[in-house]
Length: 265
Image (cartoon, rainbow, N blue to C red; front, top):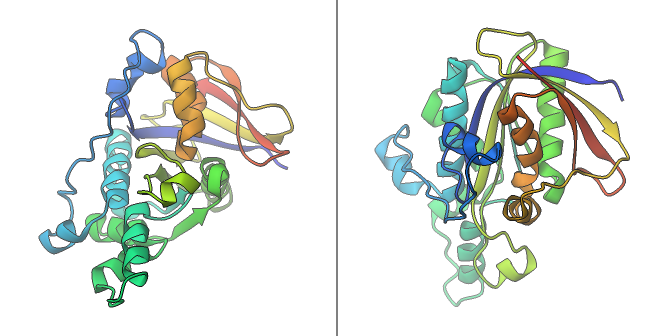
């Protein structure tokens, strides 16, 4: 595989005990202890009132992280192609539909139905930002962060344009939680660019490797990394936060991982 290279211009982050990118830097660099706390999803104020009422946790999560990353990069969200990647779809909505189908009353509401499709978050993103650019939506189970990163990088390199990656997961209620036990919502967004600009934080170069994925030395953050597929991004985010040149190996497929070289800008 050819090495794919791009520049990170903006980061959005939201998860248990990680409320945004600036507020998480001290935790990721080890200057502050990580204190796990339930993820607080902000209301999607960028949506019109009707869509705001219908929005799910995935929509709130992707809007929060995506808009944070775009604002940090000082870009217009409506002009950015995007890649949405998650290990599954909207767990709560899926649960409600399954409950309805298992009952005597099987009439599913239109809101439940249109929120059930895998690209619902991308659709709400277009409504909130006015974006009419290309949007890819991926699902690769536990490999979803790395799959999304490869897709976004391929767009950057081949199309010579910026791309916004949004990787995210939200939990299922029981009994589905027992099958796919995601403990809480976690999302990360990266604005990737083909050339170094004024807002560039780091250059990343990505290639395939059979080396083992890197574990975090912080036990609590490592538990979070393992528990939520989107949190497989944490080792990369840690290097970006440290602003140090280094390599990291990220989880991907059973026999193939991603080796990422990070150089601060």
